[in-house]
Amino acid sequence: MCTFWLNVRIMAGSHAAQPRSAPMTLHVSCVSFRQPFAGFVLDGVKTVESRWRPLLAPLQGRTVAVHIAWRDWDGDEWREVLGGPLGMTHDQIQMLLESVERFGRGVVAGLVDVGRTWQCPTTLHGEELQQLEQAAVLIGLQGKHLTHLTNPRWLKAPLVARGSRDLWTVEIPTHLLP
Image (cartoon, rainbow, N blue to C red; front, side):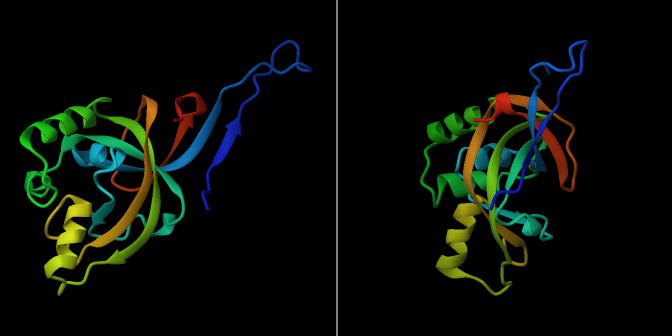
């Protein structure tokens, strides 16, 4: 179940009986991702998000906005996952990196649906862990809270917005929706 709402604003003018066309907006929870992970989520490469706390758990079954933070992820272990288990070539990785930067930084860039959140066991190893690492495009998931992400979609254009470490609500004009 997707729980967002549309807000219609009617601008009252001299002819109150005839409301003017007003912009409609989608109010939706938003979460910041550092690059390249924000783009990986929106390109459908990253289908599992990992956090040290269950930030997305209350949003299961809902759609959230994806904000691209100004800062990059510290580390490049994602390159090992893309080039190793996912089998991407150097040229494919470069094309993916160009794609994820299409809207720049400090913007709401898309939407994704939130699935189940669970804590990865600290004792998990082997093939099951490797599959999760491929889905998260990250290694070292033991002990972290993992959330399935589905149905990623880029907005038609970016929406400039200041990010946050926690969830916040953003208003997305409906003309930007995919």
